[in-house]
Image 1: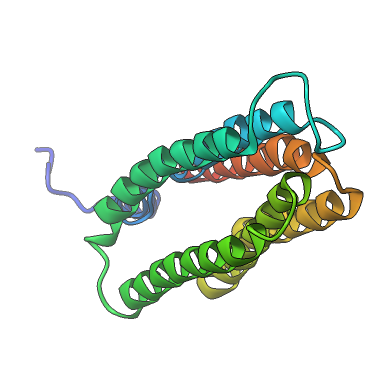
Image 2: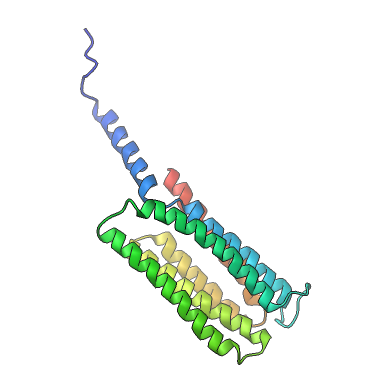
Length: 209
């Protein structure tokens, strides 16, 4: 007589634990593709349009696109990315309680405060600068805050990929501002947006494993 309820072997038990652990992580951790890829695409599109309007010199590019139009494209695509990211985080965050949930909430609020502060301060000084300098200044200060927040998030949550992404964004920002003109838009589109996309794909691949 075969005992259908015989205890599982240690190997089978280990595989069962691993499957349950992976399923739990998928529920608690937002899908990296929804968190990072939309932002990478938004930066590619938004900063790409800004570069096409500003050119290398920052005074005029191959297309008759004003800085205001390029900024509208950037903020519009980022708004879409924000909605997708918020949906992914809310779905996973609603299942998280305790100190992890509190850290996540405080981190999200800090993001919002940082972006509002950059917007208010940027508007105050941008109005006193010529268009070819206003755009790089606004972009440089905005990406400075973004890089710091990414790096801080990596430190808070113990995620090296996020920390490296923050350091990468800061490095690209410093190089772009130092070069001057519209090159900061090109670097942020290709290296900044590309870095975010690569990070999302890396985290997604690691999560699938």
